[in-house]
Length: 168
Image 1: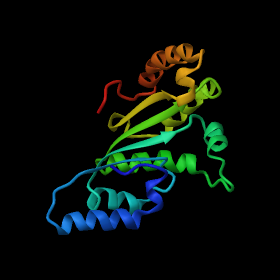
Image 2: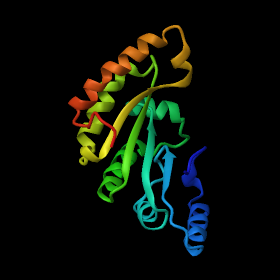
Image 3: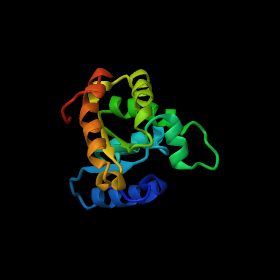
């Protein structure tokens, strides 16, 4: 499993490890947790053909305005839409995908904007699982219960956007 920080900062290291496993004759599958901003067509090819990636979790932060504010890019180059477009390419390549949308009280009111974007941009909806996850601090605050209620009710919004309600 590739995770921690941003694993796609070191694709050459993933190449080396997977190549070593392959040279040793070991059968393997891999998974990844990433923010998705460094995914390119070349990386998708590696994911499928060299890294044997069977599952990927993309972490998002809600609507584009929240995504930009929370990532704190020094120079923003529309990574938000590029990530969502990459989801289509990965789904087409047969990689199972979950989009984890991090939520708290600050971004919840803009979740409908996020859902409108994913509904319009992601074509292969049946191959993508989308879910809301309260940020760590929000899980345990006094208001956390109210956020959890919104997250549970949010499943209906996810289904209305065309995404499956059950895990892939």
